[in-house]
Image (cartoon, rainbow, N blue to C red; front, side, top):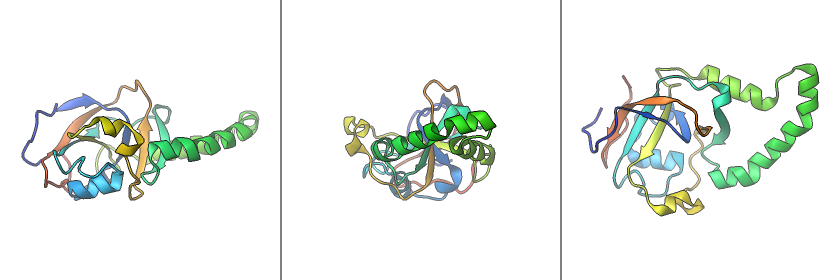
Length: 176
């Protein structure tokens, strides 16, 4: 772990979007910022905390969010309605045949591929530079296309700090 820049809690309840360790390991804060799609300077100006999950989320505990090419706004306006319509149109078939939906299969595959160590370890990046703009569509931009998922509200998954990165820092290649 790099030199601490803040009073990061050693463990915390995780919320929101997450990705896999393989997409951020060895990356500078600027590279992570671009890969995820944070506004310019959000990580590079003050740093970030990166937590690893203490357990793999069950498929019922997260939603699909494709890749970071999709901002939350574009996902909700362009992808989610089509996905919901596809699921609804196949719901009777899935119920009658007990064949899982495409969404169920994607979530099961994602959950089963995650691990508590190595490159497939789920991680959450918490920027230390938060501004009111960050909660608006202007606070996010298209990322480079790394996989991401979103924990459902109220899901009790905790994480352990793996990196407390100062400006100019980079994510280690290995976690504990």
